Image (cartoon, rainbow, N blue to C red; front, side):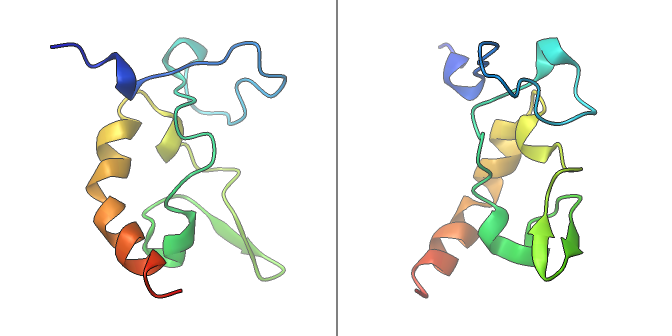
Length: 85
């Protein structure tokens, strides 16, 4: 069984790589927009609050080569949070 769906790169993107701290050949673009953003301080990432806005520019969680497993382990929380709206 293949697991190629867990990793995607878009080297043609004008922002690639959009975060420092991940080797370009291991940079995963699958979660370009992090689905954990809505978890606020429970996301587990390296973020800071800037003028009341969550700033994730120093976070590499959705972009490292093992990001799929990390993101999927928190998707139940994301779905539950989404049902609150």
